[in-house]
Amino acid sequence: MSKDRVDRLNQIGFRWRVRVDEGDENDDFSKLYEQLTAYKKKHGDCLVPKEYDDSHLVAFVLRKRKAFHGQYLPEYQKRLLDEIGFAWETDGDDHPTTMVDPITDL
Image (cartoon, rainbow, N blue to C red; front, side, top):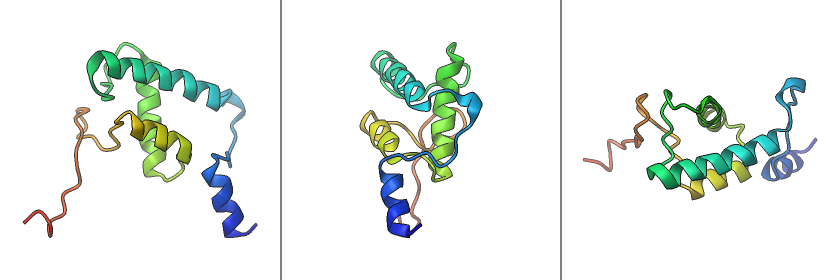
């Protein structure tokens, strides 16, 4: 398959791997995305702590960060999460971090 075709399929969120036990990921994403937007409305951010009482939402946030760093997060999911201010980098205590550029930050 050509690189162009692979790129086009990636752009529309084509799933290259399917696990039988994961259910319908798109439905799960929609439900959990709605829960995350409700969390943000209530708390002012998308930094769901690991100790939060909704373990499904905690797992969702952790999976999306892992998928982002592994470069297998569908583009439409990244775009939606970016729109609500999702923090891709945290310090381990669920505080957002930013990359420091030692050249420009002098």
